[in-house]
Image 1 (cartoon, rainbow over the protein chains, first blue to last red):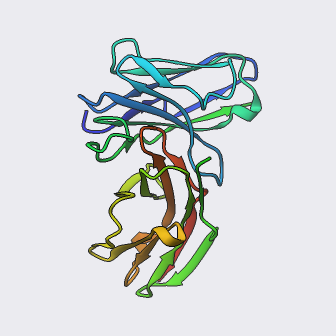
Image 2 (cartoon, rainbow over the protein chains, first blue to last red; image 1 turned 45 degrees about the vertical axis):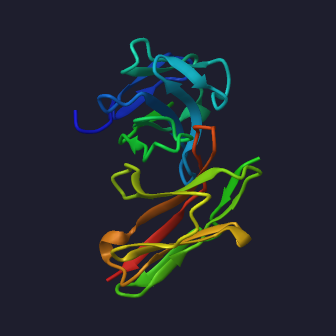
Length: 118
Length: 114
């Protein structure tokens, strides 16, 4: 596709359930990021993939959160035993290379998945 | 530790006025990148600019301009002759050299009144 695609756009789940959020990056982009944005806040970094591997997962809040990118393209963010505090918009972004590379230009963001835990 | 501060939570101006959004950053690295993103009501973050720490030249793009001052650790954004379509939340962000994550400020919500 032309841009970063995230599905679903909205997800309502019950406390304690498991959820998966999907991100389709721009074709050819090796770098993929997950961010979480709570109401009235800026996006908060969760994890960064370079290819298939998680190069930096320092932003994952706890071990209930996990993400994969098995073929270096689509990524799935998985949240186990969801809590009400997990409610937020989860944003995915991709770029040609990591943002720390002087050769890189910009990260393109998807429209996000709004997760509501009730 | 890296940090981005946008002290203005919300700004309202009348259309055609100029408006400046402030951004102050903290980093111990000498190599870093600064960004501005726009988030309209649709929610998607739109890239506006990326500037590396070695390039202090101010930049102008149409009605948008950016003033980068290392001496005050600021990277301010000015919209000239504002328009209603400029209404959005604007985020300033920082990425340290060799570190790929982008750290965002809390954003400034800009209202352009007709």
